[in-house]
Image (cartoon, rainbow, N blue to C red; front, side, top):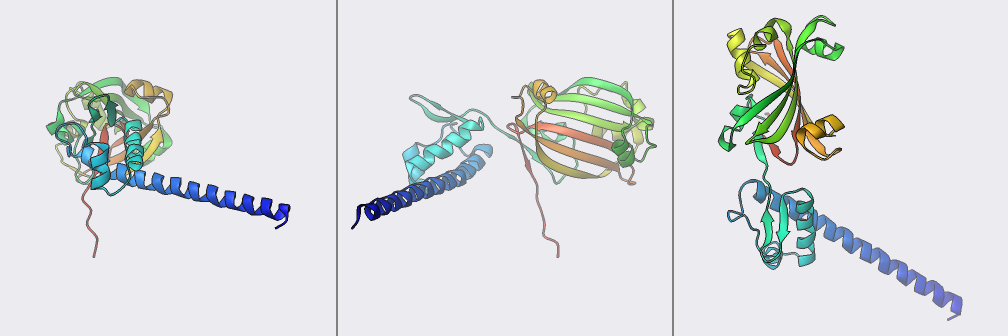
Length: 262
């Protein structure tokens, strides 16, 4: 075989080897991500009662995968701040997320009452001209004053969410002297109006924390936060509460029960 052909053949074999190596790495990364998803679920539901995960070799056996894949999955969970590796101890749970249901209309304190005490730090509160999109959704004249509230909400003393709230002023005025530090706005709205809340339209997405939000939530600047936009109506259909809520994504998980329509 001529030298040029041998060189070309060798180069081809090298390319094949590199491609195969990349394929193996990609497959291991896929499997690690799948394993991390399964372990994360157990972490969030208290599946590791002792607070320590099984040894890597046992996890590899249980999930029929390699120890390298297990290590990569644990690295993913560690990057999320859910676990850490301690010398002589192993992989331990260092953080937890609290469940927030999306199938019932409740305030944060009502939702998380089993997990501790929710307190509110009112950072800003007062009348403000309604921006166009706010006026449109609350059915008030453009530029009309609404009550604007900004609150930092904590669970057991830890920052959990930053809530920006807009309420029509004819209802919101009564909130000015209310105990917003210890009471959900939902309860106050029902007490003020004498009517039950009816339904809410929600949108949930992930956004990057701006400098202000990150500082207030004590999260890294640019960290992903869960943004819940919610427009709440009274039982008669009137919109009374438009909220933009930024949750720390490492401290909350959203869940709901869905039924398939006929």
